Image 1 (cartoon, one colour):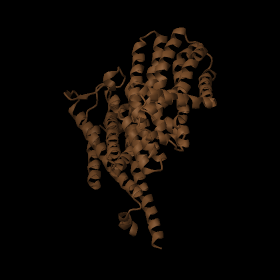
Image 2: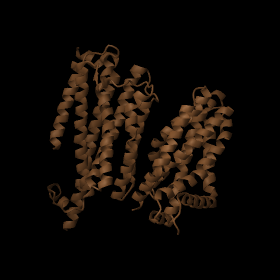
Image 3: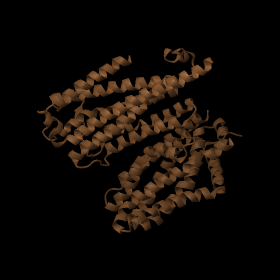
Image 4: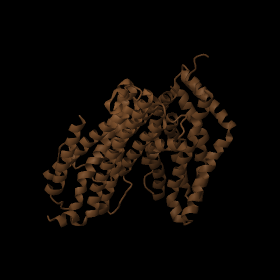
Length: 225
Length: 227
Length: 54
């Protein structure tokens, strides 16, 4: 399964980058700088989406006591955190030429920063509890609590007068140039597939770490040698 | 024991925690002193220019209140956890949420309330007007219980862990940021002459939501930490 | 567009390439870290299984 995701991700990235740089035209207002959108929007959306998926897996683990759910949540966390960081970084690099400032304390930026802290808190809490079951359940509770932040990030540009641009793509359609749309969606798909790939790879290690006493682990050919 | 009413249970728990806290007055006073020192450090650090201090004042006092709350959170459950009382509380037939709420209220009375009382004095250090100080007191009164309640969840999740205050703070501070924003915002609004009521009503809303949700979330967190 | 213009991005080179570059860096670092984690755990398991066989 992993190779399929990995190759799809790679293809999507290549296509997406091609569209982003060679097909999409130069923007009237923002010139070439707007191309940052092709990485900023995908990673930002994914950082929020992954948080919700992580909290979902964590909730499943908490309610049904399924170990694998909690392991998936732990696998998603580092990826989500890195994407949140990337969102803030690319956002800052886009903000400087466009708004003149690396950072403003508006609702969307602040809540994305809080998202990064929530990810880090999840990882830290899980790491500081020795008992795996307690660790899973405690960090699950934290993740679920924090998910209230995601709608805040998403709707912040509607609820408050913020510096950050409002939604360009709504359910009723968009005024964006078609090539720009294609570029953005392709890149989004690319990042999503990448996130799936890397999380699946990571959960493999997590399973090995946690189930190290099990019979099937010692039978693995990587270990028997 | 006969069936206890909700209020009866609450008041017994609160009285017990207050008595215990009074026996360790040093802890209570330390938090207060910490609050005062942190706030006083800022003018020393940034210079005595009155205009700048006046602008900084709401933020500084609020951040200090936040940090002082974080400091005192370790005490919320640790004493009971160490001597086994907490385990007994988990077995009580009455709702654990009520007991937790009582503990949080008692904790707030000895750590949050003193901050509210101390605030006017600190406001004067920053040359705040009487009006501003008034709003500050109301905002802190609405905000500090919420901080205690959110902090309680963090304290329950990190029960007995090595990380200490830093871990609880890392977990709880992101969740406390809205209180900080609206609390400081309320005071800034009165200083700059804009509407205060929106900030204060949001603070009130946060308080109500915290009152409704945090006791049982904290109880859940305690059960997770204790099994 | 010529290659020179492409890299310059109309003056926004630092910002655009800084963004995509950091993204690439992070993806590479992440892949390396995950592989390393796997190597570590496999090594550890091999060690313990070897000592048990003794």
